Image (cartoon, rainbow, N blue to C red):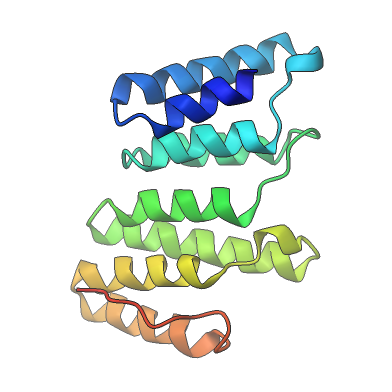
Length: 159
């Protein structure tokens, strides 16, 4: 099946295979019908892009799931994109990760519980903010930590 191929491409460590996964997803979107991509197909492609740190591409695929009635974004896909932004290693990536966390929280408050941030999401955002090394980001990390419930957050190593 298409999803099985996407899973195999996702597990590969080759940049070329992430590009193939994206091309296959686009093919599925164009063909439609019985091969329309579902949530798992999107998640595989998002993860393949995100694990390479291709945050903008992963974000674009995630955003396209919002308009697709056959796929619903979930916490796994969102957290993959958060992780891709966190890998940027600069303040901009940390701020993008934080913005995505805020978006997830808002969507969850509006009834989409499938995107409610989990401990991994929070740890990833906190780690990105900590690694940026600025006082502003340290303050933002503290705000994130204080605004979360104890069940949302975890103790994570940010070194």
